[in-house]
Length: 549
Image (cartoon, rainbow, N blue to C red; front, side, top):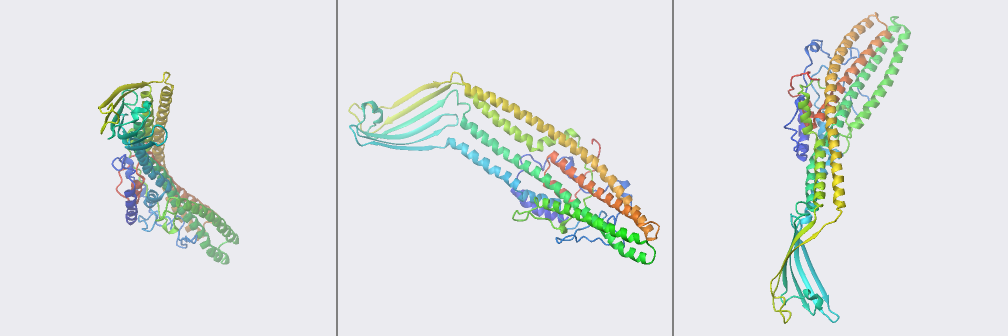
């Protein structure tokens, strides 16, 4: 529980920074699998004698795990139910991934990027302030014109403007509209589409697509978290397994080294032949080679795990040997819902279908715009103006209120641009729809595969543990016989090697079980941190039900 509390403290900051799961409601929609935690195996397993020591440990030897300068490895104590408080838990690794992993940090910046695109799209409706000052100080006609105004596009595709201008001096007769009365002219103007551009236009499409982009940010973050966390969980269990295998290999070597003095004394006393001493030296050399090879794999796994385990500044942190858990959590097959129920939940939680659906909606907007562009342009135009002040001319032809209303229209006869866009967008929607269908089929396949793998790996773990316990009993009997000269060293070595292989197979079966559990959690789209916390807590699990494999 202390380990779980430490993981919880680290997770608090993670959950505060990421709302990646809020959109789909992962916390509220957990499947039948999410409470797969520590629980005892069936009665036929429990009835066997408990294992109080590693497979090759006896009274004459003591496991030595100082295999490097980084720290001490711990043996795999399958009989102990306690977990070292200083060990590195799965929740610690997943919480570090949430908080610091660069790929997830990159995905989180998608929120800011899409928000910026939305702000930019709304810029089409900004109110624009315009002004001009045009002067002709030389020539026969000397005049001065100044103006200022406001204009903006309306939501329904129209355009509104209001302004004031002042025109003085002598104006060319053919440009009399440039002249105003002494107080200037106020003007209002409006353009409103009636066909093309009224229901939809490029500016509104940009806003709608930007909004869809913002909606896609959360599923994108979820996808990054799901994929990265699954990789991190897989590497974590590989690290635990490789550490356990390294401990087993070290124990095997320790047996041969501890037996050396016994055999030397036996040779002097005439109890053992000298060939037994040479054989034991050969075993020591071979087992040292195997230990070095195993350590190389363990170190490589530690370095891989550092990609996901990071310190407070976000730098990769190679886990110390002291952090290695003493054992795997005990395997408890989770109760499963019917496949159709799990599939429906997975399709709801998984971000991939949602991302593709949003992409379809974006293309549908392009198609809707193209359909609108097949209509002719038909705009209602209105303009009202009023001059004020003293008349600029003797005829006073600018003093009355002026109003202009009318229609203007235009249409490309072939309309190839719009028709081509309709064709391409329709085809693209069909492409994405097929991709979405394939994605859903892949999710179903992943769910089938992971459910089946977990079901079969559960049986492998059970059989491996039975073989492991039997190997222990066999080894203890042969040790007893060897000490009394009933069995030679060659045969005892075969039994020790077989017991070591059995232990490694048991370790590997546990690793495979937790890897398949991670695959199933990924297929169901469950929150990785929540699932890791359940493993860390050892909380209440549901009863095992292995029907519907």
